[in-house]
Image (cartoon, rainbow, N blue to C red; front, side):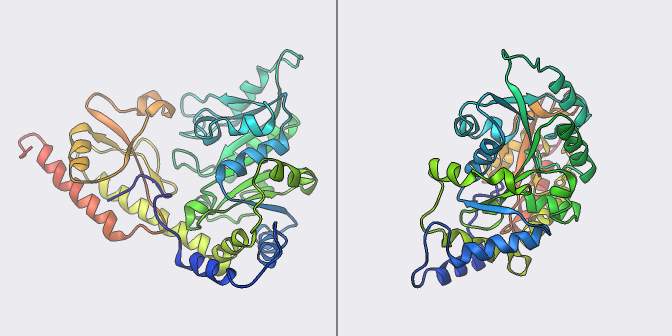
Length: 366
């Protein structure tokens, strides 16, 4: 009953098989191999236009390098205050950009929703820039799809943010560590959720969705990528045996494995949420739109679940509207499902929670 993250599980068998196939013989190094070339061409087909693709091994590299291509050292990247780039990447965006500043867009109330920035909050933050040499210069906006709270930007929400960035001369980056989960949730096409909605650069994640370790930086405006090969090399993220990155991408794209894996993870999250919602005292302040759920649990239930070996995180409610935060005797949990999560695992947690709920209710055995 481990629901801490989707990066705790192993690798899709098809990806392991593809790595074994690529392991035979010799291949040109540094991304000039046939596997990488095929992956780059296939991603052009996926996004229905010519794109520039660069493969890296980690999501932090994909995000930080993307932002370095868009932002000068004296620039600013506007993002959600709880975004991965702002909280969980150890200053990598600032390092790779040469000193650009991350500026959180603080959303209060229900204008945008948990994990999202909205056009109104973004516009207000942009208005705070003075335009003098004493201030950093707004250069880019980064949004996360799906967000840190498992919510998903609609196409209209992305387009509204993109319109604002264009009018202000900014570029728009999407952290797509769980891009496929958002696609499956919206039932949209990759093109619709990116360049047709105004995205300039995408960090396309595969690792959390079943790969061993590969992400793609996808430029929808090819001239933005003119110097990216130097950035990737200078920061130590050009793999010599690049075929093993390309082989993973091809395996994920074969038979739409990346979309099937994501759809399964999302379905398991919905199943888990529906089951937990039947337990007394459990409520959901955030809609379950991808493969992460954030139930508010009675503290006694939280303790019982941990005592029997259930694994999940207690989460800070700082990004929630005050009216949605846990009250006395409650905790906010984060649970994440993956391509490898089974219905049996979900049902085991739900059944355990139901039994524990009965035990901790007034008059129960607890």
